[in-house]
Length: 400
Image 1: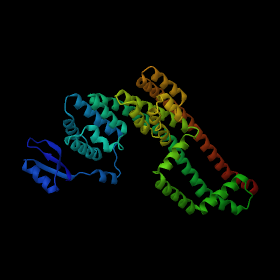
Image 2: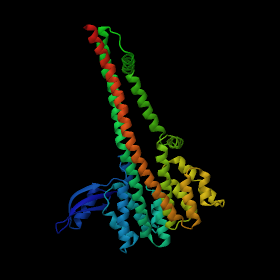
Image 3: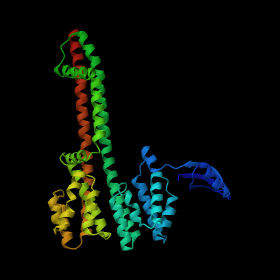
Image 4: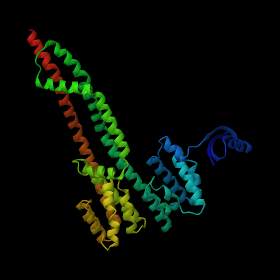
């Protein structure tokens, strides 16, 4: 049955927003007016399929806020179903609101909260459903959710830090490429006609740039079609598993990105594994969930073999050693934690260490890449200016 969002005026003059299920907007309006309410507007709510159609998505901050409110209500003594009903009234994102309603319906039908959120673990994460399950088994759901919230905040802060650090260099490269393209494709060909009228011999640099400019201008349509074809091909294969694994493996071979990818993977894997173990999930179940939490699919694929090695009787250290994807420093810290029966605590130390190192490397990379790009652009611009003005100086000398 469709759900409608209604703005109503209560008898005491308050303006409220209320959701109501009805066959039509007219039925919804009649139901509210029968209760003595003044209806200002009735709007049909978007469902998940419609929200996806328009490209709406759930932001991590919105999901964290939802869980914070849920934890506050659970700590206050409200049951799960009542807590979901109260949180539902505060949620504005239609994507999240539709999921909460479906989860609430499943909980009302007798399922646990982790079972109700199970079908949506690909939208959030397997870590979230595992945290819910651990909280339900231990009888401390608010505590388990609080640990997940802290975990989610750290992960989101790291991602935001990486995005913001790479934003300025990326924009600088894009605008520089556009500027150089305009100079080569539009400005230099005009100077070619100007130089041809004088018949003077041009310097080698100017001749090379003019040939390049004329070639680019003559084949501009083909370059555009090739660029468009590459974009279409990328959009087609970007979600293919083999392409994702190949792309993520290539990231580990590039000079700068391999350190960033490796450090972020170690920090995320260690933090996720430590969170699950601290919540009471068994090691065998935790390593499988933690492997899927790593965004790099090549590293994630290699880490999925850890569970099988544990089943064969190997320790966590030996199982991770076989994968060959974690640095030796992290392996040594994990071995110490395993031998001292403090694996969750040592995993948290590993995650903090690599988060800090990732932050330092990002700052170093940004501080280096900016002057390198500026110097490169300056050299290119200086070369183009020289190629344009050197022939003018020769022409002036000849005419004198």
